Image (tube, rainbow, N blue to C red; front, side, top):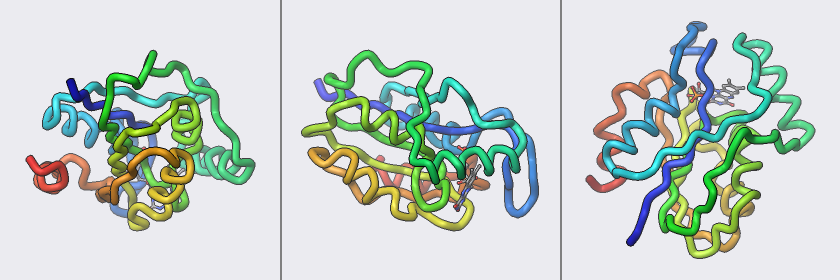
Amino acid sequence: MSKILIAFYSRADENYFCGRLKTVKVGNTEIVSKKLQELTGGDLFKIEQVQPYSQGYNDCIAEAKEDQKQNVRPELKVYPQSIAVYDTIYLGYPNYWSTMPMAVWTFLEHFDFTGKTIKPFCTHEGSGLGRSVSDIQKLCAAARVEKGLALCGSRAATCDEELKKWIGA
Ligand SMILES: Cc1cc2nc3c(=O)[nH]c(=O)nc-3n(C[C@H](O)[C@H](O)[C@H](O)COP(=O)(O)O)c2cc1C
């Protein structure tokens, strides 16, 4: 039977919303991912680094930027035991300087995505998907990587119609 996985990276704490700093308990991509779970009935998996970025926005920016510059692969807390049962993987992440947070790179390099369909979705504050989809295709060369959906992070709570349209519900 065809099963769906929704794997996502998302950071709570301090972030910009429509030009203002605000502290939140649940990140934008997590909000979207939970909606997708309700719509698709897929399994939800949160990609979490052992060493999370700082709660403060400016510190987080500095740490994440350095990780990207150094091309590091942050260690993850845990992985799904296997992705063998999944044909379709919705992959969610925030846009960090035109691509995915480096922890998503760690996640993608851990598994063999041969024959899988990856449906990327990102939340952002203006940059859309950036080059993330081509980065995913490079990392998962034997997967079918679809065009992807970009959602404005500040409007994550009200993206239901866009999501339904995207998944064809
Ligand atoms: C470290 C960092 C880098 C970011 N870089 C960008 C960027 O280059 N372009 C953009 O549009 N938004 C950028 N953002 C905004 C996030 O993509 C946006 O707020 C997203 O919805 C956050 O998702 P999350 O709450 O699930 O972590 C950045 C945010 C952070 C924390």
